[in-house]
Image 1 (cartoon, rainbow, N blue to C red):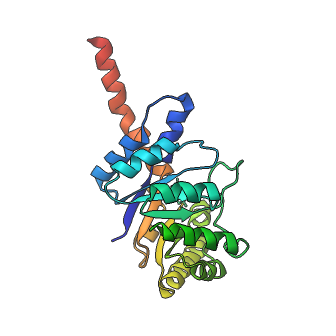
Image 2: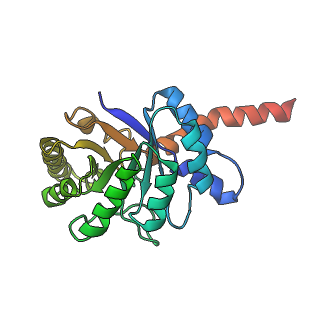
Image 3: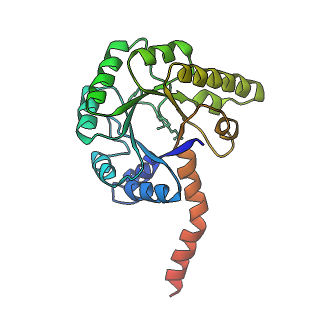
Amino acid sequence: MPKLGLNVDHVATVRQARGGAEPDPVTAAAIGELAGAEGITIHLREDRRHIQDRDLELLRQTVKTRLNLEMAATAEMVAIASRIRPEQCTLVPEKRQELTTEGGLDVIANFQSVQSAVHSLQQAGIIVSLFVDPNPEQISAAKKTGAEAIEIHTGAYAEARDQASRDKELAAIREAVGLGNELGMTVHAGHGLNYVNIAPLAGMPGIEEFNIGHSIIARAVLVGLDRAVREMVALLRQ
Ligand code: PXP
């Protein structure tokens, strides 16, 4: 059975909108674990736009499943991760202006820096996963860095607008999963997955974990709004 890695970045996005204390991604992670998530994922970005260093420190102490830290392969992030020691680090590309991670890591073009980050993190006892597009050359390069795992970028599949494109992207993911498994790597998948497009992937053999954030937090806002409004109305009527 594939596992759910719950990404709580967007709980922090809402908190940062007011610069206050609520909602707290640490509380969200605990609720997610109680509901069955088998991992908690956060992305500590260079610009700290959502997750803060404080969140990483607290989640390291409170997460009871597995903490997966998404990060750029920079000296600053490698130093932070080596000190905090999450169970896993997923190396992702990071651009300042992007709304979210826009593509997989170019392992081939950045081989030396990626390999060096992989080795440093492994020396700290951290499992390393590389976020890559479903591209055989990138996956082979990922294996050569010594990383134990890959996370297949499912964004192109999620964004496909017709069945033929979806089928084409699914076939690429299936091949990528097969190659990753053949190379002896653990395979994760994520990005843009939601309550509709997860179905064909959930049944695909060889994927150990799905990292999902935006669609779950977005749904939480809507399915939780009815109760939240009722509670405030009840207070006003007291
Ligand atoms: N996996 C990786 C590597 C990501 O960068 C992200 C987005 O932070 C996700 C999974 C989750 O994507 P989404 O929020 O679209 O579910």
